[in-house]
Structures are given as C-alpha cells and as structure tokens.
Image (cartoon, rainbow, N blue to C red; front, side):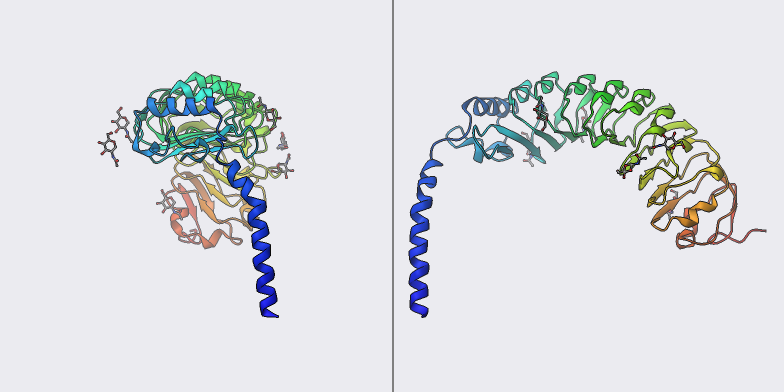
Length: 338
Ligand SMILES: *[C@@H]1O[C@H](CO)[C@@H](O)[C@H](O)[C@H]1NC(C)=O
Ligand SMILES: *[C@@H]1O[C@H](CO)[C@@H](O)[C@H](O)[C@H]1NC(C)=O
Ligand SMILES: *[C@@H]1O[C@H](CO)[C@@H](O)[C@H](O)[C@H]1NC(C)=O
Ligand SMILES: *[C@@H]1O[C@H](CO)[C@@H](O)[C@H](O)[C@H]1NC(C)=O
Ligand SMILES: *[C@@H]1O[C@H](CO)[C@@H](O)[C@H](O)[C@H]1NC(C)=O
Ligand SMILES: *[C@@H]1O[C@H](CO)[C@@H](O)[C@H](O)[C@H]1NC(C)=O
C-alpha cells in the first residue's frame, strides 16, 4: 500500500513538472516593459547610482528589481515604486512622472532627499498612494496634487514643507487620509476642507504652525478615524467638531489656543481617545463623559476648567495628571472639592 502511494506521488510530481516547465521557460523572456526599464534606469542615474538600487541591473529582468513591482498580468507595467530607508541623495527626478501605470509612489525615510515635489508627478493619473515622508523635501504642498484624482492616500509628513495648505486639496474625492503633520506649514486651515464631496479624509495636521480659527465647515463632515490638530497655534471654538451624530474615535487638539466652553459639548459614544491638554478651554467637564464606555485616553490638563469631575464611567481610571493644572477642577482623582 505504501509503495503504491509513493509511486503515485512520484508520477503526479513528474506530470506537474512537465506541465509547469513551459511556464519556467516563459519567464526567461523579459516581462518588464522596455520603456519602464529605461525610465527606472534614468531614476537610478539621477540619484547617482546608489548602492540601495544595486539590483537595478540593466541585464536583469526589471520586474525582479528591488523596491518596485510590476503588474501581475500583461503588459506587466510598473505599478509600484517604494524607496524606503536607503542612502539616497538628490531631488525627486522628473522621470518618476514617466512611469504612467504607477499606482503607488513612496519615498520614505530618506533624509538626503531634498528639493521640491516635482510637477511631473501629476502625470501619474493612476496614482492611488503618494507617500513622500521622513525626507528633507522643502517648498510648498503643491496645489497641483489636486490633479491626482484617484489618490486615496496622501502622506507628506515629516518634511520641511512651508507655506499654507492649498484649498484645492478638497477636490480630491477618494482620499481616506491626508498627512501633513511635522512640517512648517503656516496660515489657516482652508474653509474648502469642509467641502469634500466624496469621502471625508482624516486630517493629520499636527506639529506645524497653523493659526487662526478652524473653519466651521469641518463640523459638517463625518471624519472616520482620527483628527489630529495638535501642536499648532489654532484658536477659537472647535466644539462643533463634536456631537452625538459623529463617529470619530480619536481626537487630538492638544497644545493649541482653543478657547470654548466644554460644559455644553456632547460626545459620541464611539470616542476612545480625547486629548485637549494645553489649551484655554473653560467651563466644567460635561456629565456625558461618564457614558463613554470606550474611552481609553483622556487628558484635559493645562486648561481653564472648573468644577467637580463627574463620577463614574472611565473618568476615575485616569490618574490626576489627566486633570491637573486647571483653574479649579476638583474631585477624584484630584483632591476633593471644598
Ligand atoms: C551614504 O552615502 C554617502 C555618500 O554617498 C557615504 O559617504 C555614506 O558612507 C553612505 N552611508 C551608508 C550608511 O551607506
Ligand atoms: C535637512 O537639510 C538641512 C539643510 O538643508 C540639514 O541641516 C538637516 O540636517 C537635514 N535633515 C536631515 C534629517 O537630514
Ligand atoms: C481611477 O480609478 C478607477 C477605479 O480604480 C479606474 O477605473 C480609473 O481608470 C482610474 N482613473 C485614472 C485616470 O487612472
Ligand atoms: C450633526 O448634526 C448637526 C446639527 O445637529 C449637523 O449640522 C451636522 O451636519 C451633523 N453632522 C453629520 C456628520 O451628520
Ligand atoms: C459616518 O460614517 C460612518 C462610517 O465611517 C457611518 O457609519 C455613519 O453612519 C456616518 N454618519 C453620518 C451622520 O453620516
Ligand atoms: C497629561 O498631560 C500632561 C501635560 O503634558 C502630562 O504631564 C501628563 O502626564 C498627562 N497625563 C496623562 C494621564 O496622559
């Protein structure tokens, strides 16, 4: 019995080998599109043929090169270029715009990548993910990015970008998220960002120098996961970002100059993370906070809050530093009210 089964396996293997071997031969013929290959070699040359791209050898099948990916079906065009954590220096070459099937373009953790975001990127009409982050790119967040209509993810965080947020970004209707955090952006958050027609992208704007009030139009949007406005110079009333009909779980407004009465604010039941520390928020903590059964993080320290911390829910699970340095908050976990 054992003998028969091993013979059976052997013949099946033999059969599979002959069935599959034509495919092995087929891979010998180059899949990589010659035009794409030429462009990739131009990109490599523009970066001075860095060691990081040593596998980009013109004698090899380019679909096997490091840091990129061809489509799995003919015509096998290059759809992904992801250069990450390499010793790459220079500017983003205009040649990246000549990979017309690109869906993902990532230059990340390349501290010697300098210069501005080139307009040539707008030729990439299929682009879904654009991630130029943790580099030393400077200049503005270009308004021309709004031409990339299929973009679902825009990440320009951790750069040296200056100027203000271009209002044109609201023309992108498929975005899930915009990361502009950790730059040197100035000016106000444009009113137009309240007018996203398609999806509402989550906004990550922290660690910039944005100023002025947050446009009220943002109150009409249904952000899905996170809003991070922390560490800017934003001011005024942002209570309209909250409300029972919102679904947003994570809100970080810390280290700004927001000034509003917290007593009347209603929070959605989904709220998990609320950071309001270091602002000028006044009034008392609303009783509704007690009902937030998903609340895992709360910090309202360094504001102008007053009155008794409501008792119950998760509110006494946070230590006193979540509440300290207010005008006259009291009650557990702070000292009891007089
Ligand atoms: C990166 O490149 C520079 C100049 O091309 C070289 O001096 C340096 O040693 C390289 N660093 C690493 C980690 O390869
Ligand atoms: C970015 O460039 C500036 C000067 O152009 C340089 O001082 C700084 O060290 C660079 N940053 C990084 C993270 O390499
Ligand atoms: C945008 O994406 C859709 C769906 O993936 C696709 O049908 C369309 O051709 C894309 N548009 C461009 C300009 O690539
Ligand atoms: C939530 O309700 C307010 C008024 O109560 C309304 O103005 C706002 O558009 C609503 N938001 C959403 C996302 O439906
Ligand atoms: C907001 O979006 C969530 C999904 O992210 C959805 O479940 C909810 O119904 C939306 N709310 C409103 C008021 O549009
Ligand atoms: C709240 O924020 C203050 C000020 O930054 C900090 O000292 C404290 O550790 C934080 N507490 C909690 C519980 O997050």
